[in-house]
Structure formats: structure tokens, C-alpha cells
Length: 177
Image 1: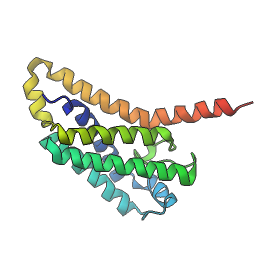
Image 2: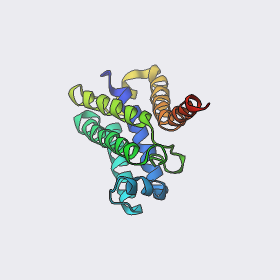
Image 3: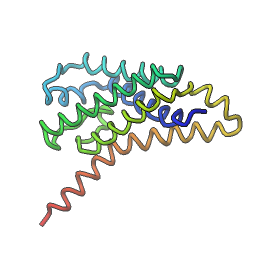
């Protein structure tokens, strides 16, 4: 199994969860779009959510460079968006990444999205296989692979929510008298 299959699958899980959150509760993302002067409506947010779900499904169902390229483009766009939001609103704006469960935007958002885009870009050059094929190749090790993909996706999501809040709290502690 290609080495980037698991990491890209974990990033696809994050895209899937974020996409579903945007489809279910788009209003949490609208203020972030407005803050960076992008078209801001529930419809636009839902369209982004659809793109995330389709990219995730492409990675998981087909593997290969097309899904990796879609994930790369989305994560790169999210890194640019997070940087613009951080610049325009400071740390007062939520990114809206995961609907209501989102955290205020911080440098963690930018860094995580840059790393995710880099992993996806590498997976274009070193093609990954579909999730089902990876599970089929592994035999008795398949449950561990599935667990690692889910945990990896959960850790990325935690970095974007809890990690961002922790970065804010650490900054407040440093600035306290």
C-alpha cells in the first residue's frame, strides 16, 4: 500500500465531516466569509460543503491523483482563507470550518491547512489507492488501519478546534499581568 494512503484518507475524513457540518449548519460560516469580503450566504457555504464531501468521496472511493489534487486545492484554499480571516478579524472570528463546533481562527488553522495541502500534493506524485482496496490488502490488519484513519482525522479536527482554542488561551496567559 502506498505510504500516503492512510494520511490522505484521514484528511478526506476531515473534509467529509467539515462538508457535512457546512451542509447542516451553513450559518456558522457566513460571518467568516463576510469578514474577508467573499460572497457570504448559506448557499455559498453549502456549495463549499458539497465540494468538500465530493473531494472526500473521490479520495476514499477512487484514490489516485484526482482526489489528491481536489484535497490539495481545498486545503490550500482553506489556508489562504484562514490567513486572510486572521489578518482581517484578528482572533475574533470563527472560521466556521465545522459549523457550530468551530473555533476562533488562529495560526494553527493556517499551519494545519498548509501541512494538509502539502500531504495531498505529495499524494498526487505518489498515487494513493482507494480506501476499500487498502482495507482489502491488509487482511487482519485492516481494523487497525481503519482506526488509524479515523483517529488521524479526529486529531486533525481537534487541532483545528481545540488546538486553536489552546493557542488563544496560551496567548492570553502570556499577556496577563
